[in-house]
Length: 473
Image 1 (spheres, rainbow, N blue to C red):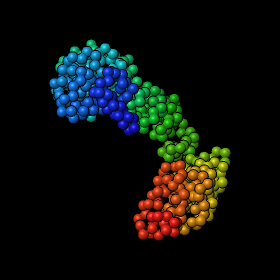
Image 2 (cartoon, helix red, strand yellow):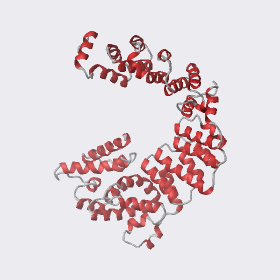
Image 3 (spheres, one colour):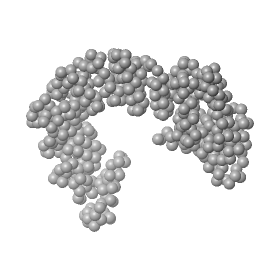
Image 4 (tube, one colour):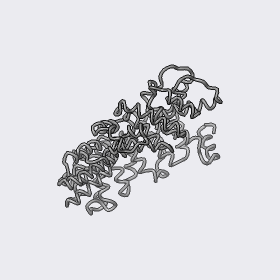
């Protein structure tokens, strides 16, 4: 969203400077921006012209192409020999039929000079304009061209001709592959998603390449499209170890989970244990399912992990808690599980201690005295989990200890955790801590402190507290 706003601001700025007399070509100034900059430019020129009550005059053809008067837009299309393709494409979705038809003819001639480069540059804008009433035409033509059904270029240049006359100008398979590959690797999210869908729908795919794209993709929706394509290909052609390994190493959990489930058909279910301590709960659940399908006991595997100080991780502890449920893993008693988790409270790794605190909370809680002693733990994650565990009993906690942990000079994460409990406790202790926290560097903590001081639901009680603090309410 931030990039869209920035592009929009740039488009409006370029429009304002152009109407103010700037001679720099619009295409050069918007070359580094996305499609939203061109749309904002078109809208801003029309808005400024409309507010000028028709008195605005400029010889710049870019402004005339965005004029509110359809006759001026059509005349600009007829006179222009080398227009920015983005503005012509916007006019292809114009609300005036004559402007639309002329723009499509102009665009067809221009795109035919460099079809690959033009389609790569225009596809993101085509996808944006596809949401308009007359924009679906461009989207349909783009998809048909890149899927090989017929020629986008001939359809734009000769929209009334039968499809049998278009083959002379069709994109080759190599050209389509280049365009789709560039769109798949570009920065525009809608274009990446579009390219993934078209590539998979066009015909047989390389399962290894598809899995590689799924693993490298950072956008969840695009990664899911590639992942589904890789799984479908393996379902038809049989498992591929290289593709499975690519999915297992993916950045996003959905692709890794798909790789774990694919291990079964690949005859590699014994590798399920390697993924029981994954950072994603989805992947851990798939690994437990796979191990059970192979006759193994994931709970026993987790217990061996968490009881080995050299192998235990925070995610292994979380998986240990997930595996057992309320009654404990492997049918063991709750007290045995609690003993294992208690032993991990002194582990040197902060993530392990934090996971142990969270696990004890899930299993029925931990000794309140022990948790209070861990409130000033050097690990921020531990302090955060301790505060969550003590939140329900905040009113019974010693205010003096919480105030000491929230006092200046303590680490910021300790002050944040203690202040969370003081706010839940209420009273003068929370207000005193809030006063001290008004000058901390963390803006979120400062905002919480201000809210505590000024947004009390009981103004009379707040006034009494302020009087005791020596402050004006």
